[in-house]
Length: 572
Length: 62
Ligand SMILES: Nc1ncnc2c1ncn2[C@@H]1O[C@H](COP(=O)(O)OP(=O)(O)OP(=O)(O)O)[C@@H](O)[C@H]1O
Ligand SMILES: [Mg+2]
Image (tube, rainbow over all chains, first blue to last red; front, side, top):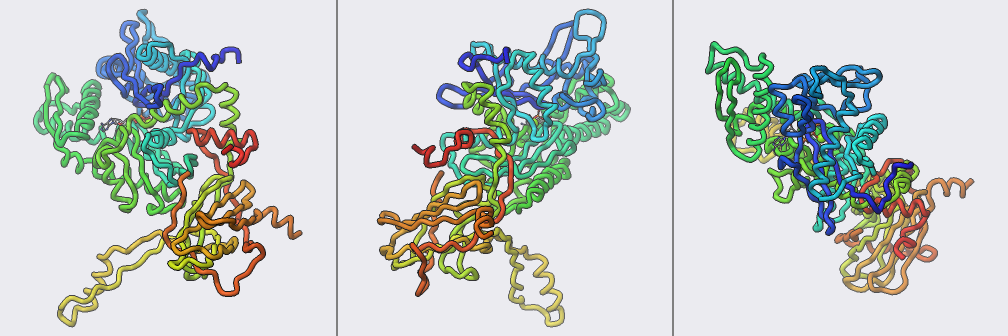
């Protein structure tokens, strides 16, 4: 590729490009991701362009044009890239320039020059213009010309969409080093924190945006991430929460001004309502009440009102419940249980809404950590997770040749066998019925893998058995024992019993069933209070290599368990 | 990777248990599932290096 930059000349940033907002970020020389504010001071830059007498407005300045200049304002276009007109949902762009079919692609008919004529600007060109503005803001901030980026995309972005975005970025003077998945960028943002612990866990990333919500279930194993399932929803969104407030304030307004019309039926009235309601919604994320104030809402009437959070929480009730159902649906799709989830990362702008966070949190057991601003003081700003992840990845790969990056991201390298079941040891008893399984390597760990465990021994030490087995995760449900009867009249005894068992919640626990036994080994003469170290390596062929020794002791035992294929050959 | 610490004790070796070199293979792991790992983060880069250069963990440690 002739246009490829010399890696040493690259200035790379991270870009998150949403339908509603975009962000730019970079990694400092000491490895910290920072989000860049544009010239207006915004870190969440509306993905909007507007043209006034040939002048291009961008971001927040373009967004206010939705009131007076909606026809020449292009918004909510990211998901149109690389698509055919017949396969898009134009709904989000109803109150701005409408997408139209243009040859095999999509365009907007806008007046973008000083001349009195409209031109059809393709979604690719709009995207290039938007990215160019982001690039300029980043270059101004950094004091050097940005020429490369890692850009985040949803997990269901197709190759055609990525190709289109790649071309649009190139037009804007940006070499795309890599597209990375939005939820994975969010995980990376958390894992890059200096105090982050590298632990195996099942994560849920719920990215709750303006025009869509995306949930991904991710296995994080030794710092390597695998998406187990994802769901995408275009109904349960931030725009719908705005609409809840739009309807509320429109009705309140009409109650007060009986002769005035419905502001929702007036194009400008509706645009003003939308802008103000989004601001009210954001204010309710930190304050317990917020003011609504619009000049000349409809028929020249100014309108101000207040709303408190309790009211908002009630109004949005159904939607909040829908957010939580969406997250549970994704867990189910991954064939997991809420008990399997160690952490929920709430990402996207709507993660700021306290009731969204608390409703989702309530659907999970107490053992699940919920990372959202209203529930966790250590949460990272959910609106910045994607861009931070992109900025970190950009700093990791900016010195690589593009060819190198392409090879490393090729399925030859990324498609990897994953363990179907956990592998671990039996504790307390070597009998499968009474022994307690403890995992050393979790299910869904990519191979090859090597893990070490330090295991206690019986109080007196001595000769111990190390029985390696597969563990099958099992959710144990215990119905509550009927409570001892309260002093009651004899004759309604039976009824009250039934009432009790219905009221009590059943107890759900994560336990293990012992699956296939893999091997047995002995370590002899362990000293009192001694511990045994077990190192297990599982190859891509499922062959197991185990090393056992007493911690601090001499010698040890080694064993090899052939993979299923090798053993078939062997016995043939 | 951090070490897994297991506080529950290992079982006592049953009377009369014996095996050559104290190790007895019994079964095999079942099939694995092929999945795509995300090409992101520095642990992935280490994985990619091992895979592309066909190196093992211990070779990588050196
Ligand atoms: N502080 C806040 N409190 C509540 N909602 C917020 C807050 N900040 C942003 N939002 C809402 O979050 C949504 C935008 O989310 P995000 O910034 O993740 O956008 P996006 O990825 O561009 O969205 P999409 O592509 O889904 O349209 C909007 O509905 C916005 O009103
Ligand atoms: Mg988004």
